[in-house]
Length: 343
Image 1: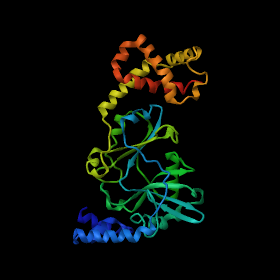
Image 2: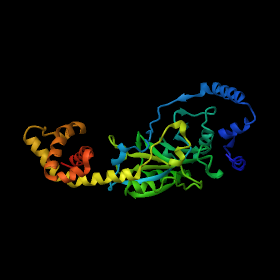
Image 3: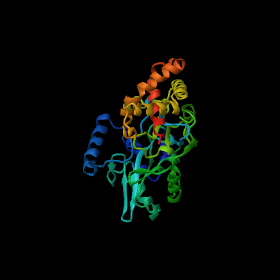
Image 4: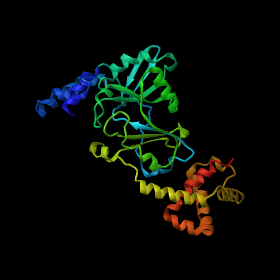
C-alpha cells in the first residue's frame, strides 16, 4: 500500500481497527518482535473467539462440471465480487449480533472494525427487517486496491430468511431502505453465454484499477436443492497474487464454446420426442417402473441412457461421431432435462 493511500485511510472512522494500521505501527520492528506481538494479541483474543455454523453457502469457483448450470431461459444477476471480508448482521427487537465468516463478533474479535460499524448502524434496520441475516462484504484493505473512501463500508449482497436466499431485487430494496451500500451489479437479465459473463470479469464499479471478479446468481433456480445456483469467477491477474489460496479456476472461453456446440448438437438429436418414446417403451417392456419419476437421476440414467445412445447411433450416427466421447455425458444431461418436463 502506498504512503498516500495510507494517509487517506486515516480519515476513516474505522481506521484504528484496520490491520494495515497494526502492520504500519510495527514496520520498524524486527520479524521476531512482530511475531511476539501477534502471538500475544492472539492469546488475549482466544477467550473471545466463538465459532458458529455459517448457513451461507461456500460459493464455488468455476469448474467444467458447472458448465450446464445456466440455460438461456434463466434470469441471472452478475454482481461485482468485492475483495473484503464476508460478514453479516442480524437485528432483532433485543439488539444486534454481528458475524464474520466463521466467528460471532465482539469488542475484542471485531473483524477489523465490523463489530463497531454494526453497533453504529444497526438502528437503521427497521422492524420489518428484523430476524433476517443480512450478508455483505466488509471492505477493508486486502489485495485488490480501491479508492480510500470505499473502505470501512458494508456492501450488502444477500439476505437469508429461514435458510433461504432472497431474490436480488428484494436484497437491493432492503439495502436502500436501511441506507446500506449495495454490491454493484453489472448485468441483470437472461443468461446469454459464458463468453458474455467473462466480459465483466476484472471490471469494478467501485473506482479501483481492477476488480477481483464476479459472482453470478441464477435467480430462476434460487434455493434449488440439487443444483448449484451461485458461482464465482475470479480474474486471472488477481489469482496470480493469491498463491496461498491455491489455484482458482477461471473460464476457458474456447473450451466452453466447444462444449456449448456439443450440447446444442446433442439437443438436436436427443429430443423430447425421442426420450418420451424410449421411456414409454421401457415401461411397456417392464424394464422401467411406471413410477420412474420417483427414481434418482443417476438411477434413471442407468436404466435409460444406454438405450437412448443406441437409438441415436442407429438414426443419427454422423452427429454422434461429431461429438465423440463426450456424447454420453451430454446425452445424460439432456435426458434428465427432458424427463423433468414429462407429466
